[in-house]
Image 1 (cartoon, rainbow, N blue to C red):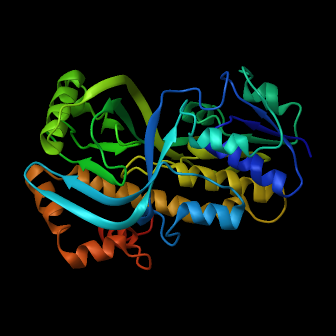
Image 2: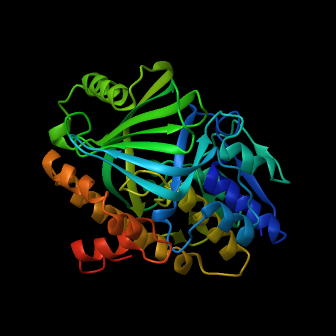
Length: 362
């Protein structure tokens, strides 16, 4: 077999590492000049969204020989709405770095790779596929998938983010829900040191949001963050993204072409993170190529998890600020908090089935 992996992101590198584990070597093509050639940003892997895997880092290490070092473990999650504040406590997950940061997950995966990566390779799928029996589409771009099959876009998102200086506790994460500055969206602060954190405002680009002033919303959000954390922040660098597609494929595999990571649809719509799912799709594609599993069957739970997450997002999007306050206030009840952080009960799956009783086609 001749195997090509298009993209050296989380899913592509996880696929390559797994293939090496079973004695296969893949040619990896990356259009950029280095692994993680993008802006620096912190992301989170929340255990509450990965049931039955209560510790994603441990699971990847013990079950798949992929070893990651998070920036920090999350012990407290503060949730802010217009007039309410709640706090969840426990081992809630991990924060990690992405992009050009020297300890980004991309760079950590690349350091474990025995084979090499061909950089500055902007060849098309048609060009690459001619010389290989198997191709893993891991470019991270849904538009690459759309050239080959339908890609169901749930929504396009607008991002405004920055790295800020301040006084932070690395074990504490802050999440904001308020339609005044995050219409049908959210904001968050993820510390990656005692002095630096990533701050992001993200909301869907629905028609009713198109006329909003993005910079005005960003200003309101920054002011709210300063008020809630009682400090002024210094912006080190910032970025802005438009038309970021959140969705998923109709088919995980076509012939000997495997769609993984964001080319498959690994981002969870409810909060917008998908590192764990991206790596799993890469691992599962490698299992299929190595003859020890069916990619289509292995990703079925991930499809269902995506649809459960989308159902929750649709429900939250319908809430005004008063309803968000009531929802946030309920998090302070011990029973609700215990259910959310439970390692045995998948509360979000249960809620999504209540909201959408008929299982979506996966």
